[in-house]
Length: 576
Image 1 (cartoon, helix red, strand yellow):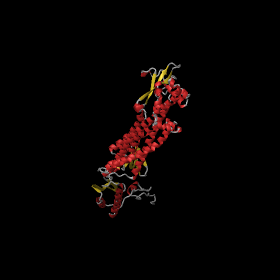
Image 2 (image 1 turned 90 degrees about the horizontal axis):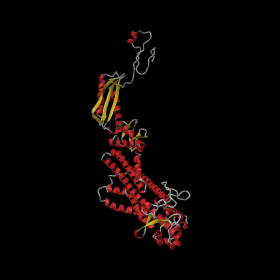
Image 3 (image 1 turned 180 degrees about the vertical axis):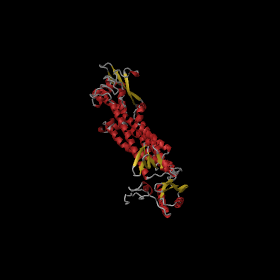
Image 4 (image 1 turned 120 degrees about the vertical axis):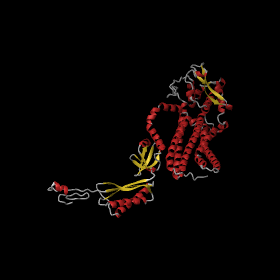
């Protein structure tokens, strides 16, 4: 394996662990929330038409539920059965005369079968007194099917009995005749007959107590199976990967270890939990959760691959001398891909738990104008980050000046860019506004510019000034880092108090601290040159002529009373 091309610092490892942990926690919370929501919807869906007094009233769609409808009959049967009112529950069974002495037992077994084998949704049962007239059956309604022997699907039917007054809906004799067979096929009959009575009591989600114990034992078994399978697979793939020249496959095996274990656990869960013979509603929930976890493992693996590719690009670019550009573009596009994968994962998870994703997307389309108006700033900043990356205005690590802010670029995010200033504070500028700013990038300089003025006094002879200019230019050209094409040291103007010599030069350096050291050394040498040539630096001064009061205008114009250099003033008696 060749690991030298991929170097991960401890900080990057810590960031990866934190990112994976936070991502795993968020994903787990989302899945658990969806599971609880789906469970609550399933539980409340069993009694959609129950009013506060326990009587059928109206369903969630506002349709009146007739007290002599198939839905009302099923609701009443389940309500009496769960209250252990078996005589009243048996009234909703069409029991043959020969079996009427077992009607209580049949009602109890039917209630257990319905709970364990039929994910009953009362909203789908007709609330009308005449039943469902669209199925072609005027005197019977099918409310579901139960898997019988050899995979046979046995219908569960209600029949409309008009011989009684008022007319009622009852479970048909064909359905009642199959209750014993359905009941005997529940789970392992030998286990049910040998378990103590307390373990056969129903608990939450209509699961027996022994099934809850089985779930508690199955979860560690699932973790063990996932871990062993993952380690075995990783060992086998590592043996193959060590024989390849690239290290990409080795890193991929390491990064996908967590997602692979989650995938194995999600795939194995239905196979292991099916041995507990869970009821249809919980089994459907487990199957849905398993599919969602499989998808979660896939999306988790995609996020790991995106992170691996991002770090790979950054390290490859660092080797080729383009590390700054890679540290700017790779995180930006990596974040865009991660957000896209996260949104897709959320939509898929919602669809797996029965939420109407199509309706949601259609609603977003209808309210697209409102969403666009509300998110226009966010979209503006997002496109601003893309435009900054496309224009390559600056890179992470560059020293820039944007508006009134100057500092080093630390991070370019999807919404804002962080700049660390001279005071070591961090200024975050939205990318939409930053894209419109005048940006001055010091990191793009190929050489640095020195411009300074040397002001000499007026009593310096012209020959000395020329000699000073020549000495200044020779000193500049002797500097090893000088850019020799343009070196200037010449007189540019006569100011009020000095002859100004302007010095201009470029140095082939890009490091600011190195330029400061060069400039410091040269400015001190300029002082020595002026001193060696017998000249001096001029300072701002002004000559003031004071005219006595008894002097004539002609004398005042011709003869100065006092000439004072510098900021001093002259008084009427000549005292300074």
